[in-house]
Amino acid sequence: MAEPINGHPNKPPQRIPQPGDYENLSLATKAIHADDPINLNIDVAPPLHVSTTYRYKSDPSQLDPSRELELSNLHPPGGPMLGDGHVYSRLTAPNTSRLELMLTSIVGKPVITYSSGLSAFHALLTWLNPKVVAIGDGYHGCHGVLGIYKKLTGCKIVDLFDEKSWDEAGLGKGDVVHLETPVNPTGKAFNIEAFAEAAHKRGAYLTVDATFAPPPLLDPFKWGADFVMHSGTKYFGGHSDMLCGVIGVGRQTEDWEKHYWGMYAERIYLGSVMGSLEGWLGVRSLRTFELRVKRQSENADKLAAFIAGAIDGSDKSEGVEAVKSIVDKVEHASLQKDDMIWLKKQMPNGFGPVFSIWLKSEKQAKYFPSKLHLFHHATSLGGVESLIEWRKMSDPGVEGTLLRISVGVENWEDLKADIINGFKELAADGIA
Image (cartoon, rainbow, N blue to C red):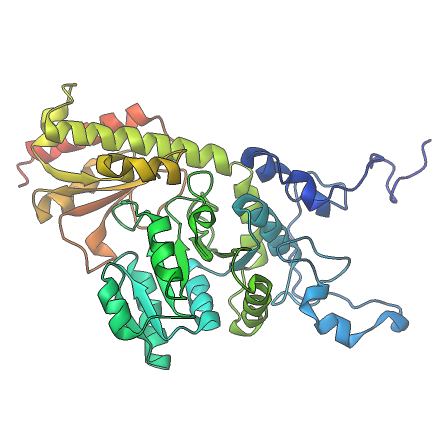
């Protein structure tokens, strides 16, 4: 019988992989193998660890409080845990540490996870402590967090698209220009490089919420972002069953390690850590991440193009009249024809799985979701299933005629047929 290797007879004699081994591999391969360096047992599927606390070393001579309390001794930024470093799950835990290792490889920069997208945004504001924040419409939840931050600090909030207001408010070094692209709920994209230039010449940070276009669709760091935020609940999770927030820290940003470890340390006391189950679900989800996102984005491109063609008359296929009679307009990054020079460079692999349509009356928008069979009428987005939302239900600031569509991985022609039939039913019911 062969001698046990690393204490187990079935463990193959092999060199332990290092994180750097995967830097030049494709995103699809990273999603499967980026966590291989921490596979120190024989499980192929990573186990769920539910413990909240972990034993110290049994040898008293190895107990060193100063080392235990120094965060940089735990792991390199975004890297694997060094040795038996877990102490308490509000600091680190096996499942969330594995998820952060994978996300760091996928995003391409050191990543810190949080309990939700909004807790990630709150943590970013808390760490940077800006006196002025420039922000556009976008996700109403971020405005809610910013409102709380303003109440506590008195910071000024200015219009993202009005640089004159930036200067009047004194936006400068250490302040924040927060860009959401593609933007919620419409799916419209903005030029990151242009906003990076405007922010950096004033000494401000550019923070980008790229929830609607995760890798492989968009890399905001390539275009000048200092920090990138994701609601990992959406595409990183991808199954509508976990909450997660993600902040990536750009290595090109001055004092990036200070930012990384500062946010890491503050997370301990903010308490906004992911649970172990959510960390485990996140790892499971990332295995199919690239497959899902590319399929969803391709589906959205085709559906948005069909609806746009029905509205302008360029599409003559069956069912277009039902669409044209009810839909007033559609918006999606793929339809920004005047922006394609920069947009195709910024998003070379697709334009995102979310778009919005405006119907001709609020009543039509309210009733249309009930006519569909393959779209769940629900808020959120990013799951494998297609969703449609009469957006007024969760965001009181939008027009009552707006419907947000999050496209899933179903066959796009089945989704198209469902949309056409839904509009036909709406018309047949005389809802105007």
